[in-house]
Image (tube, rainbow, N blue to C red):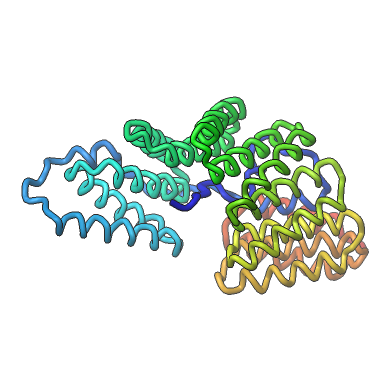
Length: 356
């Protein structure tokens, strides 16, 4: 079973963010893990307690398996509403069949889907149900994954102590059953908890230890995620050499694995680090590479992020005319996205440049 990252990306965006260089403000500003969509979620309990169908047979299982595969594909395609419908239909059939293992897999998909829909409450409920099933079945690997995902969710809610306690439970299970993948995942997440709590040296120590387990099993995506966490920690203490080294390694691994989120996160970190030490040309070059990656998804929010960060760099370089042009383009996109907060911040930056 492959490792799942429910809350991949910039976990540092909520709560007490460490004091990083000014450019990081823009990178954090345009990252949002939980986007409310207004979609009304369907209650899981209501769904699985519909009347049972006595005619269930192998064909029903085939239908459920197809729905589960379809739901995963729909989520990967950015269609969470359709994924939710498919997952709940699959769950109803698996419940009728009494297949707990398949229900656990479906709850995993539901948790991911609810997060994409901004429904944290139901995501947590799905994770707790997945964990209960894994414990009932003495399925230690899924216990490790569910505990880590639940801990990551607590971290996103700003509940750092609950996050640490939950992830530590996962680490104990992983060590007891000598699960290398689970130990790497749990240690990486504990490093992130330390980072969120401002204990940067501890975050680095745990993160470096986590890398040993990631590398033992050739988990390139997991290693890239841990390296990005380390990059954040090194950046927080101003160690730019190790910052650039960590983000650079993460970027190469993610690129080789065709894993876009960690690749973009690494580029954002490198842009911040290079700009912080005055390497503006390299920062702009990295931003152009970022555009080449995001152009295929045609996401206005990514365009907005690129324009705002580029504007900030040109402003630092003293090229105020270029900075104003970029800020103006960014404001136009913010208006179309109806993002009043970002629009206000950009207008203020533009006003600050008047007369320059």
